[in-house]
Image (cartoon, rainbow, N blue to C red):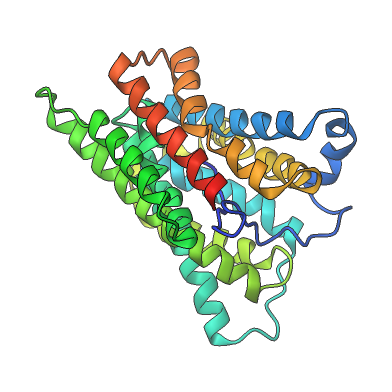
Length: 310
């Protein structure tokens, strides 16, 4: 994961609360002139690649910081970038609106925390494939077609293939548990992202969520990271993770969604587990077995099928 991807079933995947932002505001305006020469599918693939390279960079940081400290650094830097750009407007919102936004932020923080804990224990491709079951479940529930039972079965087969039945150590099971938890939180995040986008103007909801997520992960992140969080090289790498995982892909995807159908966008995003596995191989040297590649393929095909039938 992943970025803080705001995936909503109505797209059928990503719904970004800040899509209504003015065309001339934010990082997207800086990339629009260059992106006009790139076909929309190319933009989506660039966004996926950016997210996964950001995850690879974050995983390299685990040698210096705990996963919770890296999550805190990434979300805090993302909030520092987004809040001044979004200039959230909270006046006129009800307590219920604020509660929805806070729940959205809590799901964002816990989702990323769970995913990074999984990433510390599993190869990237496997962690992303298991986590992907969350948005796939939301897409299937929203569709309610009998054919979707096939995609559920295919995804389930993929997860079964990824389980360490051959007597691997318990850390793999812990990693799978964290990845599954991240997927469940991703499903909650999808529902809350749509509710937040409906209640908050512009990008105010996402900005509030980033602040709440930062506060939520701060106790464990600061406690585990300590003074290392203030080292200049760590701050620089954390900024790189935040840019690659959040700011850059958000801007690129907004431009892609402006120029392509949402269903095509969702189908292309279904390639993310496979891209994660390739980045893990090329950047981190994570070699997967044939069984694991087959499992990732099952999840990708299931996601594409659910997107098309949705």
